[in-house]
Length: 302
Image 1 (cartoon, rainbow, N blue to C red):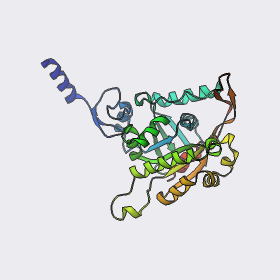
Image 2: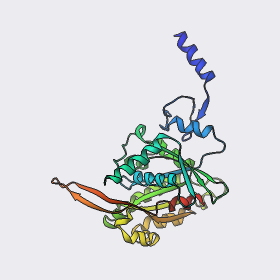
Image 3: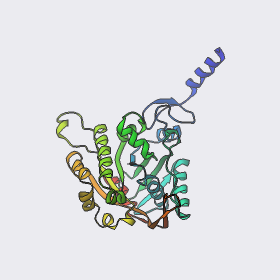
C-alpha cells in the first residue's frame, strides 16, 4: 500500500498539470478523457502547449439535422484550403469524422448516427489559418454531439455537462436545422430550435450593470441543412426562416445582437428508398457542397 502511495505521489510531483479545455477541471498529464465532461486530454495538452487561448466553435442541432455530415464536409474543405482558409486537423478524431463522412457519401450513404454516450463522441480540433484576418488563427473545438444528448440536456440541464461547458467557452455557435422537416413537418423544428436558443441565452446571459436590458453578444449562425431538397431555403434563408421558423426569428431579434441565416447542402441531390417494412432510407446521389464554408467564414469575421 505504501509503495502505491509513493508511486502516486511521485507521479503527481513529476506530472505536468493541465486544465481541461472544456470544463476547466485540473488533471495531470496522462492519456484518456476528462472525468467530468469526457473531453480528450490530448486536446487540452495541445492547447496548453500553445500560446494564447483557443477560439471555440460549437455546432448544435436536433437529431438528424446533419451535424456529422456538416462537420465532416467542413473539415474536408478546410484541409484542402478554400476562401483564404486553411485547416489543419490536430487529432485523430477530426480525421476520423472527415474520413467517415467522405467515405460514406462516396458510397452513396450518409454516416451512422452519433451515439448518445458521451464517452464515444468524437471531439474535433482543427486549427484554421485565415489569411484575410490579422489575428488569423482560429480553433474549431467541438464534440460531434448526439442530437438526443442535446435534447436531453435542454430538458434536464446538467445531464450532459459538456454541452453547457462548450457553449460557455465558445466564441460563436452554429445551430443546424433540417430545412426539409421545417417545411414539411410543421412547428416541431421551430420549437426545438427555440428551446436551444433559450438554453444558449441562459448560459451566456449578460452580467453586470443593466444586464437585464442587454442582448447576448454570442454570434449565432442558423444553418438550414439539406437545402438541396428545399430550394426555397437555399434561395433566401432569412425569408424562409421568417415564414417557417417564426419563434426562432423573433427570439433572435429580441435576445441576440449578432445572428445570420444560412442554407447549406452537402449533396447535389438525394432520393428516398422505402423497404418492404416501410422503413425509409435517404440516399445521396453525388457530393456537391453548397454554402458549407460561408457560416464559418461569417463567424471568424466577427
